[in-house]
Length: 113
Image (cartoon, rainbow, N blue to C red):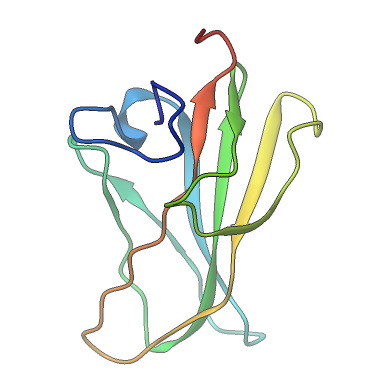
């Protein structure tokens, strides 16, 4: 979470584990391929086990959090006016066996000044 609103998650700023992210899903591009729900680690990073394939990451946040345009965000679309739960989506990422992809979403509390 970008607590100081400088456009990037800095060292010491909380991650997804603080409650800003409601859930994170891997959505497969291919019909019939299983997706995956991510598990959030205590440091705010998250992990999802997935088969090789092409996926996009769906982030869901709830009030009082908002998506922001930030230097380290990988979101290609989001809607902050979607109601209580807001969704953001990364671009498509292709994974081969044993690969890791890092995908970030810029999120901030609307109550931070």
